[in-house]
Image 1 (cartoon, each protein chain N blue to C red):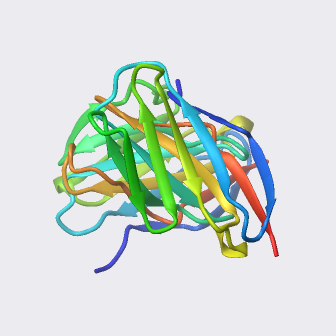
Image 2 (cartoon, chains in turn blue, green):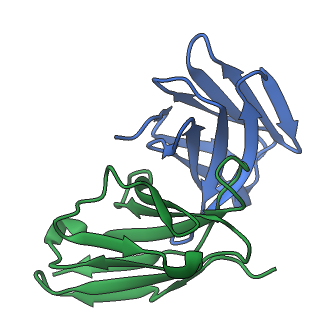
Amino acid sequence: SQQGEEDPQALSIQEGENATMNCSYKTSINNLQWYRQNSGRGLVHLILIRSNEREKHSGRLRVTLDTSKKSSSLLITASRAADTASYFCATVGNQFYFGTGTSLTVIP
Amino acid sequence: EAGVAQSPRYKIIEKRQSVAFWCNPISGHATLYWYQQILGQGPKLLIQFQNNGVVDDSQLPKDRFSAERLKGVDSTLKIQPAKLEDSAVYLCASSLHRDSGELFFGEGSRLTVL
């Protein structure tokens, strides 16, 4: 069974706005990763946060992790039309499990 | 550096027929994964290899799906006989080793079962 659940399932914003998506999971993890998938393509790794980290930044991406609540969030700042894609969290313990995904649409 | 290669990109078959997908991971990557992604859902792990040994195949429908990774490099995933619900994208991914962090994905093989 899949480990993570993302919300919202779909998000539509204007270019320049920030996009926030959340991931909740059920069991203990070593790290949590976020991936992006453009339509009809494979997944591309965005960022990894370890279980002993609370926040991490990479360019316009900010990830937080709360292991007590078993949740993570991905913030994309100053969104661009090219950010339109599906975003998945992946929880990594003994195995790699992906969540259900958030479909982000950035309107130019 | 060459990425993960998969073929074919698209395949259409009728139910009860068989199909095989091929994956060539990034050179030197010991860990290889096959995922099934049904439209609108997240990838579901089917099988994980460490070199040529199976680490996890708990979600592989073994009555119809099989996978092998001979010599710890290329891998094939076979479905026989196919059912309508097998229509999905089959994604192959690799990582340097089991605990190395990120996965590198191929473009996927899209299967349509009629």
